[in-house]
Amino acid sequence: MDIRHLHDWNVTPREAVAIQKRLRADIRADGVIDPDRLSLVAGVDVSVKNGVSRAAVVVCRLPDFSVVETQIASRPTPFPYVPGLLTFREGPVLEEAFRALRHEPDVFLVDGAGIAHPRRLGVAAHLGLILDRPTIGCAKTRLCGDHDPVPEERGAGVPLVDRGEVVGTVLRTRTRVAPLFISPGHRCTIESAAAIVLAMAPRYRLPEPIRLAHTTAGRDPGGQ
DNA sequence: GCGACAG
DNA sequence: ATCTTGTCGC
Image 1 (cartoon, rainbow, N blue to C red):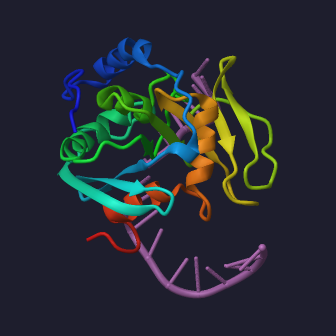
Image 2 (cartoon, rainbow, N blue to C red):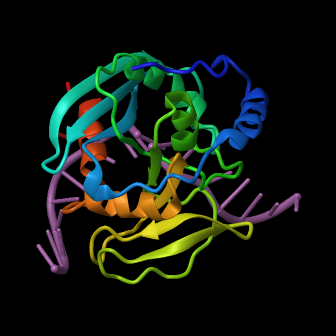
């Protein structure tokens, strides 16, 4: 699918921060999306091994999560891991995989933060601008913000607040299992983001599309 | 200066 | 993220 070239990836950490501050103004968090009306959902993830980053984008058809397309791309890892600048580590290889996409997903679920980021532009939000499609950040641990305890039952969620601003939801997708940190990326509301993730994770902690991308990118089971 | 810190 | 076996609990 068509990808937008918003800036160069070959930048210094300082320039990366400047780019994030400039792009944050373009994020639209007003898209109400009904989980029941989704048709195609993509899972996005990147694995790193021996200096090589491998991106996987898996497109699923609802409501059965059948895989309709898988795109993989590999490149030398271009940037070190710096909290807050994950996009500059995974962006280049992900762009390559996105460009090869034949389907146009209704929403992209990304392994990482959305606007629940120090500058409100986590990898899911940044990718949303590049794709100009709805994206949702699904992080396994907290990057920023605070929250009250989350009830133990599946479906329970509490607001994630950073510097006085609600940036997402700490959501329990499985009873008595560590919650996920959900935040909108682009073109999606905080409420829709949580509802969609819950609907996409009927059995396991992580949403099905992300689990598929996880293994495809090279995890414990499958993947080459 | 000190503590925090997605993947 | 990645390095790694067995083990406790639903």
